[in-house]
Length: 154
Image (cartoon, rainbow, N blue to C red):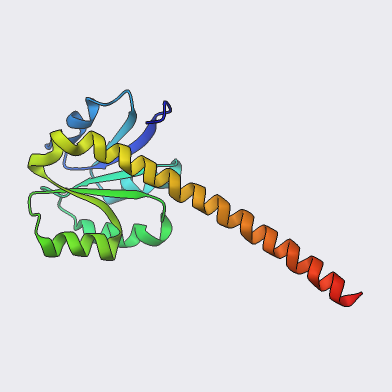
């Protein structure tokens, strides 16, 4: 993992212990815990958040509505869900419809969280790198098109 810390926003019910689980790895991550949709959006708007960890256990709001809204606005954001209700249908919907990177059951938090967060950060970096390459390619294409038009005109 990179020596640079990255930010994880943990959208959870304060009564749950996800943040305390992540604190074990705090040398690798900056953790921001929020408990409402407004705070999630504010954090995402205010800084470059790389990972959103949604603990849907005991959340009053429907996390799928939040994910739906985030999909277009923050496409590089890596989304991870922790749930007590892990069914095949729920996982498929989360991955296919909301572009969720990982879906953890409660009993897997301790054993798999560090690896999943590391993988999520790697995925985020690759998406950002791809976006930069696409931007460079588009710029090069525009320059080539301009040169071609100039050549055709002369």
